[in-house]
Structures are given as C-alpha cells and as structure tokens.
Image 1 (cartoon, rainbow, N blue to C red):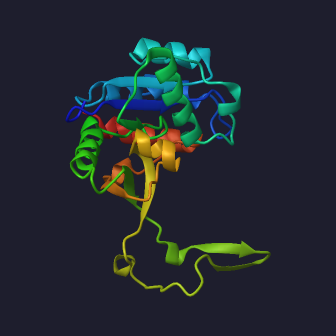
Image 2: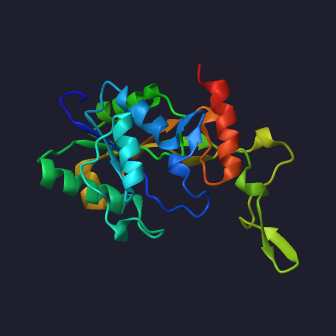
Length: 236
C-alpha cells in the first residue's frame, strides 16, 4: 500500500507471440523472461499483490513458482493479437473482485518485454502519482528516442518522402527538441479511471523518465539478445 491505497501489479503474458514464439518463458540470463517482472514487483514496498494474467498453463506454473498469484486463466478471446492491455486489465480487476473480493486503488501494468527495470522506478512512479493524485490519474514511463522524427522517411514506390511534412530539420542531432516514446517499463493508473476512461493514457497523465539503457523492448530474437547483453552489464 501507499498511503492506505492498495496497489495491484498486473503482468500480462499470453502464450502466442508471432515476433518471438515462447518469449515469456525463454531463459534470459538463466531465468524465464517473465520472472524478471515478477521478481521486481515482489520487492516493491508498495505493491500488495502480483498477478499474472495468462492463457497458458505453462506460463501460469512458471509464474506461480516465481511467487506471483494466478487467480484465473485468461480466456482465449483476450489472448489474441487484437486484445488490448486495457481489455486484459479490466478483465483481471473484475475476476479478482468476483473470485477473491479484493479491490485496488492503483493498477501497475508491467510488460514482460521490458525487463530492464528497477524496483525504484516503480516506487518513484507510484510516489509521484500518489502525491499528485488530485491532479493526475495515471503515469507512464517515457524514454528519449534516439532517431528524431524529423529525419524519418516513408516509402512511396521507388521514392521516399518525409514522414512529417514540413518538419524542421537540423544538421546536428543535439539541436533537435527532445522527443519521447512510451516504453513498457510501467504504466500506472487509478483503477477507477481505468474503468471509466478505459486507457492507460488517461486525460490527466504524468510521466517518469527512463535511463537510456532501459529504453528497449523485446519483440524479436535480436532484441532479446541485445537486452540480455545489457542486463549482463546492468545488473550488479
């Protein structure tokens, strides 16, 4: 809890993955990818419960052994490519309430594909959101992008054009305004807001800035190999 407000850490982990099959159970530095998110959540002084939402009995057993709770198995219609994280989170809150009777004030969404996170990231995000709860309903993790949008191109047959028409361009990278991308280290939102606005990007939302080495997500075997290398240097 944080100031008498209950906190659920929700880790979505379906079995299907086209980019990297079996990624949630693939060993990363000797332990399943999903375990990195579970172990970080379990060490937080603010998180009350760590729940994994999955359609896979294999993932469920791995998560249970790592210390997470599996109060339900996610239905097949919420384990497709089109099912959203919001759908999964709303279903989880409903199932937990109906099965156990527990309600939460905050839900922390932790995507297994962003394992380079620290417990202090989650706690700083919760502290910032809680201390500004009269102003903000959610907080997301942002990382500065390396390739500025003003340089990006799109293809048109054998030609290319600017992705952003008439965007200002500079010859030096450092002259560009900093822009940021929402990486999946953590999305935190008030449960009441999630149910009403049905988004992890509520109208009143603040942010937490990540370190450069945290700005990676695993969607392919190349991502996996690079993140494994970073973690081997990052984790002491």
